[in-house]
Length: 214
Image (cartoon, rainbow, N blue to C red; front, side, top):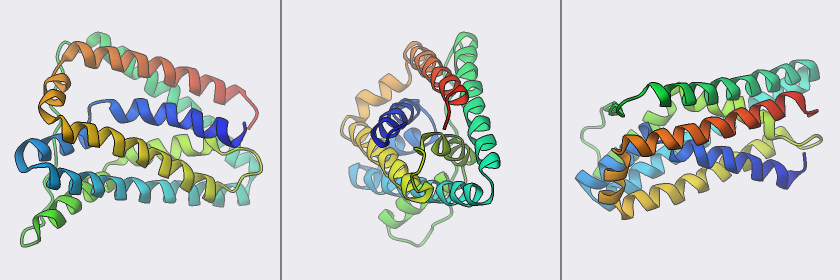
């Protein structure tokens, strides 16, 4: 796997996972609809900050594991690939069982007494940092897209930044067109289609990465 192949492959997975209606999307959407564009931008910035921390943590962990044992590192990559297959299969399975899209619970972070933009940023950051699914995503995917001979830390940071840039574009679209996005996110049929496409792609990536040499 070359550098650009890793970037391209990761970008596809990150894009599909970013556009799935979930906690981060709901948080930014709610901020845009109820508090305005600037607060929504601050919320999105907080989410991006949290994601970058997760990306750095996953990259450092992968680097340490590679230095300790190549076998252990390979086991991690296979486990991550299997997780991607499991996640993809789960999305497809749930898409056939789901009759309606349940609302996503958004936690409340106690930031009283702070500037509105600081509160919005803190809520986005803490929501992301306290969401274990974000950590699992990075731990499972980043090792899969580190080309042989590349620095895991540097490559991990690059991939985290790629994911952040994709999220920035997605959040910007939601903030600018909040009303349209709101109606679309409530469309159960659209969500089922996205889940099935995403699940299929994840299974394909996971299978390829599990059987291919690192």
